[in-house]
Length: 454
Length: 135
Image (cartoon, rainbow over all chains, first blue to last red):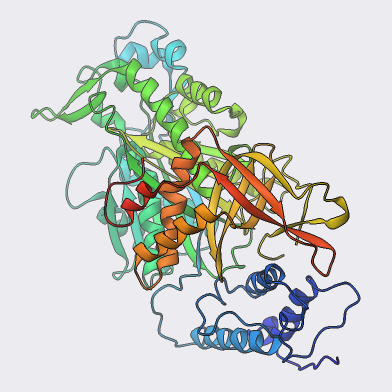
């Protein structure tokens, strides 16, 4: 059978795919080595060229190579069984995409197939690093309470003229700079904090400080130490469900003011530092995410087994009233974070051992070490935030994620392993997601199949 | 590049079926049938095996019927990879039997999921009908 060939524009020149080349390349992967390519109208299955499994593989290959996931799902009459039929569907999708990319096209809802990726990141911590001994003294704690028992060496404290807004603005500027973006490009601002009290919200103040556009929406979300995951979830959902193509996610926490010595139990207050983190999210077409990390499926939950381990409420006199059971809270936190990581592993299909980093909440270094032991994860995969900066609230996981992204951007691997993000807050409320880089989830060490895959 | 289906050379296939422990499973719908991605305890990842287990296929058919929306597969996929995958993951008896199809024209035998344990419980389907979550 003689193969018919047609010339079409290349992706680089006209934005359209060389559809025939894609179909034939994929078909070739399932045909015997020396078999000729069939004519375009030959039914692959009726002609005994492909069985049903091979047919599925060819279609999946075309979807991946063309960047149209799900292209052949749900078609009336079923998926195509010939080169001609596949070309027809592929060219229709290419034309639709080209039309949507034309200048002046009105943006609509996000395409279900598009990805959200982290294009920029940054963090900022209080400018003063206070040694543990000084923290212990300020809170009238026995010597070594912070250093030995908790493992915190220094705590990052904001200067007296710094506040959440200053920390947030610095982190946001770093994230925008890393992404090569400017403030007017931000279409949605998502902010989380566990310390800012007052209205207008911190989101409003940051919007003003960064001079974002008037049509850039603001979403202030809660979650305390789990706030980063909530904010990432909200930001990703906005990009997947609206016309917005970018979102800026910011965490900022200033404990210096909220947990002043003498007002709150120093065994608790002494653990906390001040910091902020920011992430610039951008929607991209599949295949165009390059080396950027993309959040996959999120897991958000709430466990009712530990409701009384911690509560922080206004005391009616300008301070806070704290109730906590430190040892039980620590054990519950480790147990829940470990379960959350395994839940994420199960849902994402990414083995824990394949991960490049774990950006988790870190109450203190001792609990982080316990988590690493319990989960069987080497400590070097946790970018350690709490040892030098203390517990930064919602920004702990944020700063850890910023450090993880920075480390991975410097690695030689084109597609470093996934990053697991997991955090929990009082309640316990918990949330996490797995970020993968540059396409399908990588497999773990030793996962090379003995069998073949096509 | 493709859908992740797995095959062995017919000449290397010493037996037509084998059993393995697995760490976790992920379900997906591809064109015409449900398939699974399996992470074996030994570390191998089998990207896409078609489900030919009758118990599971009956369960999946019923799940799709109960899902009842315009895109039932999407709702069922989310149900399977959420609550059902978690229930499987909690079960210590996770085990699969993997079978080989007859050799195809290229001399390879596709791998199929013959059995997946634990077997599905019809009680799990209550979640799709608005009942309690799989626990």
